[in-house]
Image 1 (tube, one colour):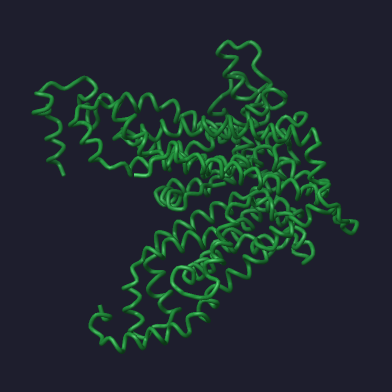
Image 2: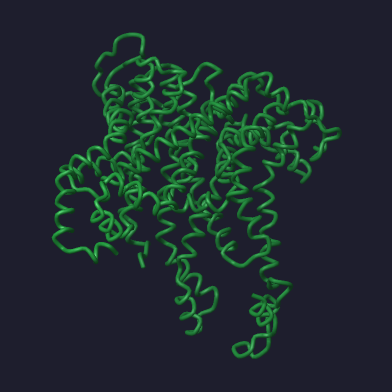
Length: 301
Length: 307
């Protein structure tokens, strides 16, 4: 490990004939050019983080401190009361629970039903397979707003407004997940299944014991993507919940905004509360998020 | 491995047993997903089409009005403005966001000090819920006490824009917020694309005497066109569906300056209960997205190089 470092530290022999340009000169583990690039990138990165910092800063101020000029980044004294207030003016703990129940249920249901269907599309022959698959693909292009109106009417008819099943089921059967997993299953060599076939395994056993264990990356990518998408989903839960108790976090924030339109300290405390879990998980498990995005090709919205 | 060691007849028998049951097995595998897909996606698509041909308001029984909703949409000056707003939003955000994302990706593709920090900083807004960050940006854009105008005052700008309460600046403000939020997503895809550019191409070009600028324009850029195309198609589709920001930051205002297609659908369907009119709008949105995507695919052979 240490050897290549010490080699690269010396002047390059051969092509550069011992002369190293300023940009290529080493400064610690990096070249001068790389340090300069990082220095150049730093203000942009701080601009990206500024809204988060400002959110936290405002949430720790009193409503009087908010209007100080020039604005203070670190308030004196720090006011923690906004967080307590957020949880008392609205049932934010309940919003958390709702968001978690919905996002987790949708994720589990999608993984199970999509992987089952994907196996049929990838490995089994049955009449109408290609036409059906085309039907799945066709709906991928249709924006969600087209189906939201009929789904709202259906849920209303079923009396499922303000219910978990109303929040969960319409989102739980994904054509996208089926498509993604089918593409992945197709890359698994057939020979692995043949072995199981000879050993007398049923199709379901093959799916469970051969295909699923080999599909870890695709399944985890789909799981992360689905959970995040559901956790941040706004329009659909906004439409199908109107009692505060059934609000998810995003809709709860909207309710908070409706009641305290310009109470910035309170609104920012609510936003921090809503963002914190996802951002913490993200910072810890960042590479899984990024792999999930590149593998599914579809981002947060 | 056991497939090779077992005798051929045994293998064939096993396969025949499976083939017979295969059709039933297939339907068994499909059923859970298919039922849900039919109820909540496939049928609603056509239901929306039928609803768009009625004047349903959920109170009175629906009356068939044929294509009147669509005709009304074409004549409605407000819908014209909504289309214009959405088009400005798409055309204004997608190229800016993609260019910045590409630049950041190129930088982060190097060996840099603090690389993980940079990647986290740029990607964080993607993970954050749009509702929560839209609330902060609403506060940042506040005309009197917002962070942005405080900064502009400090820089000597005498009369900074009133941002979200100005008909001229509200839409650009939402666009700034959206670019901020979307850069990281495109950046990650560009990074994946950059890592897919084979090193031997750069090596060969270097041996032929190509400098870094030449290599960038004649190797990196062409090799990256499939990623660019993909990012563009997805970004355009997503941008046409902008909603969260418009509701949280401005509620479509002032004077419909930030009223977008999806916001207008939401308002008509779930505030005015003009289900037929809103469904017609949703289908128009689908039509627009479909045509725009088709056009992009049509013209891709002119500039996309599939290695």
